[in-house]
Image 1 (cartoon, rainbow, N blue to C red):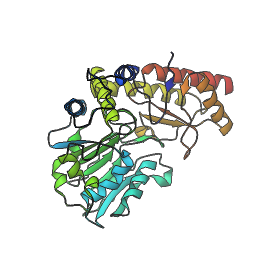
Image 2 (image 1 turned 90 degrees about the horizontal axis):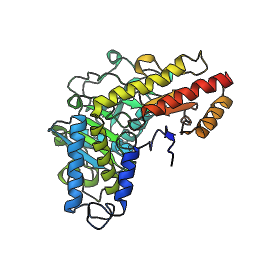
Image 3 (image 1 turned 180 degrees about the vertical axis):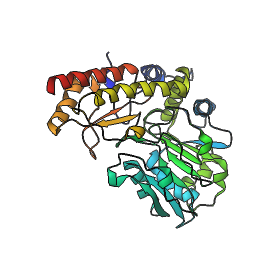
Image 4 (image 1 turned 135 degrees about the vertical axis):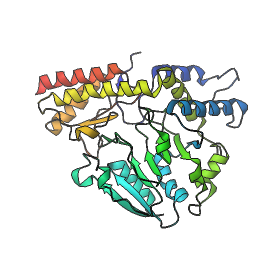
Length: 361
C-alpha cells in the first residue's frame, strides 16, 4: 500500500511506524491477552503506560518538576473554558491577545466567567501579523494573559515569548507544541490538543505551573477543577486510554528522531520549500502573512481565482497530496506541515506547485 502525503490541519498525519506498531498491538498488547483499549485504566499495565508517557513528554519538551502534566479529554476548546474557572475570580479581568480564529474562540469560551480585555488584536488587518508586544495594552490587575502560539487558519506564529511581567502567561500550543525548543518556565499554563503534533484526536495535554493550582478560582464541579485532575493523575474519570497510548508512542517516536531540536530544523526546511514556491511564483501564489510571523506549521495561500483554487485541490489530490483545501473561514489553499510530515512531502508539494503554475499560469 502506498500512503499519500496528508496535509490535513487536524486530525493530522501520523508516522507510519507509529501506526504499524499500534496496528500490531491492537488485538493483543504486551502479552496481557487483551487489547490496550480493553484493559482497565487503573490496572498496573496501563498505569505504566501513563507514567511512561508523562516521563517521555517531560523529556521531549523539557518540563520542569514544578509543573503538573495532565492528559485529558475534551479538546483544547474545553480547556479554554476551564482556564478562567480555575485561574480567575468571578468577573476578574483577564487579558487576551487575538492573532486569529482560535484566539477568538478562546475569548468566546472565557467571556461567561470573567471580564475579558482584548489587550491587542490584529483582526482589523485580517490577522496577517502579530501586534508588537510594546503595543499591547496589558491590565495592571489581570489574572493572566492568554495567547495562541500558532494560528492554524490564518498561518501566523509567535516567534518569541512575549514579556508580560509577573502575570502568568497562558498559551494554546495545539498546533506547534514539540516542533521546536521552548522555555516552559516562561509560561504559567501550556495546553495543546494532541491531534496535530502529539498524536490522535481525543486527548489534550495541559501543563500547569503548580503554584497556580493554589488559586481559588471560581465555584466549579470536580470534573472542571484542575486540582482534582492533578490529584487523581488525570484519572478522575475514565480517560481516553487508546489516545493516551498512541500519544505515548508518538513521544517515543519524536525522541528517537532527535527530539524537538531535530523537528525545529525539519520544520524550517519544510516550510522554506513551500514559501519559496509561493514567493518565486511572481504572484501566481499569494501568502498575505507578514514574513516575520509566517507559520512553520500551517501555510495558507491563494491562487488568482476560486476556479484555480478548486482545480489545485482536485489535481493535487489525484497526485497523492491530500487535504489541501483552505479553511472555510478564509478559503484558498492550506498546507499543514506538522512533525509527522516528512521532508519528502514538502518537496512533493513544492514540485506540484511549480508544475501547476507552469500549466495554468
